Length: 244
Length: 244
DNA sequence: AATAAAAAAGAACGCTTGATTGTTTCCTGA
DNA sequence: TCAGGAAACAATCAAGCGTTCTTTTTTATT
Image (cartoon, rainbow over all chains, first blue to last red; front, side):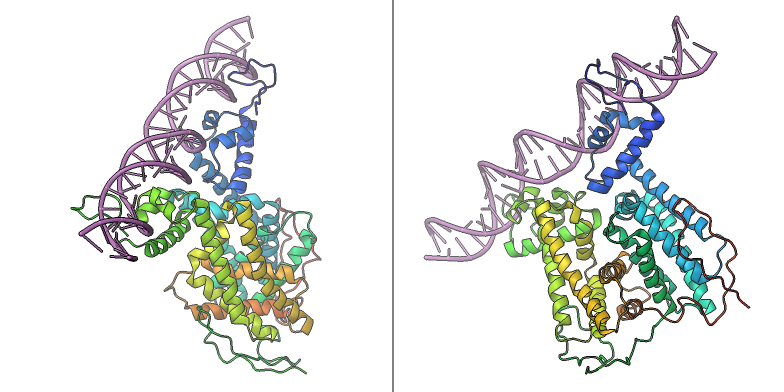
């Protein structure tokens, strides 16, 4: 806190200052600034100014800049993991677990966009030792979903040939929401949860009716796609269909 | 380039130096270092050392650090957009177009991970004017998929209530592959394209047989999930089912 | 062979950065 | 009430940053 008022002598400990409160303010400001500018781009003077301190005073609250980042990311990951496990506790049906996981992940990411963004983007800014801790936590979190998919496949409810790949795919899709979601947008959180969860469930429960041929006739494929450097797909001949 | 050999007088222009070649080397080293350390974290001295130059000499090849980033990202986005349009050209059937887009996006991202990563992560490091250009290109790219989904929904092939949301979801999912894919892994590019494209098509073609009730009976949901801060979903009562 | 242009070296610049230290002020509990 | 610890300031440091400028060498052109 602090922030010297106009007619103060203006030195040293400021009136009403309180360690716990300042610590929390620093944490919040840190999240905000790292989210906005990135860890490397945020200077400690900038952070100190945001809280109303001198940069040197920050060192009462963290060992160094790197540890500030680590604390933020580690605490976030532990929170994410703990809350997910709590939400899933007691649910055994794979489909219900999948829906619960999906809904939890989406809501968590919509309400904590800054934390999530930092945890995903700034992993590379962590020193090796710190990164290892965070990656381990992330693995455990991914393991929750992977296990759900595995169980569902075993029960015959899901059609998932590669649970690991599907896990990465689903998590990427769900996490992507915080790249564009903004509170107060056209669609409510509930609506978005509905839409996304539908996509996840469709993907997990396997092919709908339309994979190969279709009842409704379609327009004919006119030209063969030209190679454009990425190498055109060697997949089986595209289904030639025609429309009325 | 350059890199004075042992018994040279060691000043100024180095033997065998060539502008075009150096420019290309700088570009490549730039991509490599930004990918590894991030734009802010990469210093021009680091970049110069990677190429075998002094930092000041770099300014023969770009206006400033910011423009180097912009050039890399802009060129990448234009390449991505152009190749996607080329791959889709001539295909009219929405399902075929969706598969083509999905396969293209995956292959492109698997073979150009560094460029893609940079374009996605360092947008915030671009100055406003530059960012606007890049975002516009990205919009056009997303528009390709959105239009495919819209057309497919209109034709009744896809069941997509919100093409915009589905577009973001699909692109996030596909792009996510370069967070973990490494060449030479257990699964080949073709296999991954198969898996991912299957997920995309299932999601677009709508609900499989398992959305609400299921032929195969499932285990009963034991406990109601406790609220864990994210607020338990207000969705309609979870389907209560029982297993043999 | 002479000359111009290209390519890079290398030194210097003004700034900002993360970090450290010593000092001053405020707060609180015995 | 008054000491002692907590909280913050103020000044400082060396290092590193992006950038500019001048000089030197190599290559290309005539």
